[in-house]
Amino acid sequence: MKQYITVGRILSPWGVKGQVKVEPLTDDIKRFKNLKEVFYEEENNLKKLNIEEVIFIRNAFVIIKFQGIDDRNEAEKYRNVYIMVDRKDAVKLPKGRYFICDIIGLKVYTLEREYLGEITNVIQTGANDVYVVKSNEDKEILIPAIKEVVKNIDVEKGYMFIYPMEGLI
Image 1 (cartoon, rainbow, N blue to C red):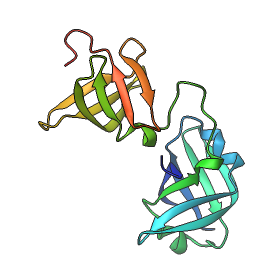
Image 2: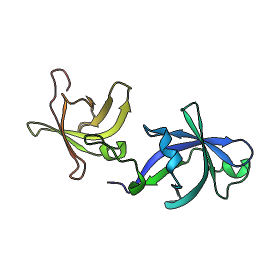
Image 3: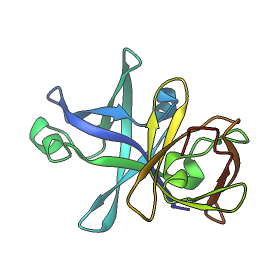
């Protein structure tokens, strides 16, 4: 499992005092209020940004002021940067819920132990997530993330077992 979990993407500078507009990539936008720091990757190195202030816009975007970024030009350097939190600071998920970054890469098998492929993406539809599985033959299989289909997930061991309903594969 990854130590750092992506929680947002900086879209653009906001205002003239160095704030940035962030697209939240988390189910709970209010989680930003409790963050003291975030991380980002630059040239394969992890860098830390300390948070001074957080403002919410229509429960859709987050405005963040980072320490040491005090004007629009400096904030512009962070456009399209993904921000992450250490797993220890991540929101605690209820049993049976997983971070997308932990789902991607899982090996998928049927209950009969037939290997289907590896999860390469998660599509969030609103009703339920859909796992995109890429087979060895480069075929994509779409698996609805519903309890009737997904029977067992073990992120530590790296696998998922599914019941392929008729017409699914």
